[in-house]
Image (cartoon, rainbow, N blue to C red; front, top):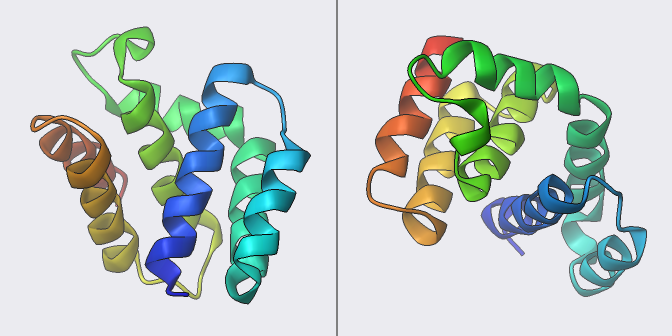
Length: 126
């Protein structure tokens, strides 16, 4: 399994967390059982985003000038949270890779305008 697939799994787990505000260790275990090669990365990002959730959301709030935080698409928020966590806390992943992968997730899961929004937020962070 590639890191991109693992990142997509982490994004899906975080997307679910954004809605429920609860860790879902059962769902996490299901994904880990199916994707054991990248289990460490998936767990690290999932638990890392959750433990830094308020901080990462604060960055999005600060950088999303002209957008109400509550109106940001949940898909875009989940993508941003994964990318911001990687940028801030996963030194082994180059920033450019985190940004590029976030934009790929946006192309696959979000709206046409989301790419520009996500790129703008991440560019203003780095």
